[in-house]
Length: 206
Image (spheres, rainbow, N blue to C red):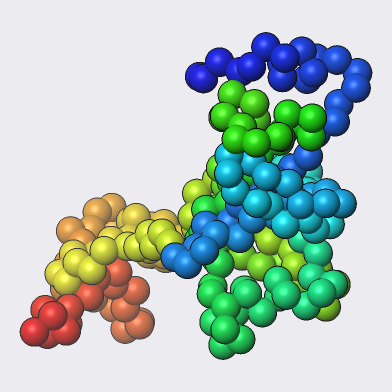
């Protein structure tokens, strides 16, 4: 981990916190940069436009689901909302990287190195809502919109279900199954098959 500036560390450990949040949303075009403050701020040569906003609490269920964080940014001037939609001249921001930096207002003069900020990197998973007053983003630790995990693979002649499991549904007396469609017919004689393969997948590829 990169060492932080001693003066910055001393400020964090003291009682007089004077921090400002700098939000940078990556885009193929110019990044969106906002300072959650009453005036614009400059960090590392880049200007962060002043706006109102806040962050919710990090959410994580008892089942240890991936943590999520809500970020709300002001849209009172009607500028941010259209930037979130391609059909209004903006871009779909889902899946985009969001860098959140906490910095001291008194240490943001000129070019400020990375050892003067605390930084988090998240990704926009979805829009909670886009209203006339504000836009709410659901942030996660990886770009969920950009990742596609297959539910299961297409295997033509082999059943993928767990034998006698919920998807298989067989409750009879036969002790084994060889995972073929023919054996499935033997298990479900006179009933609709619950075969978990894709016999026509070769035709689909062709």
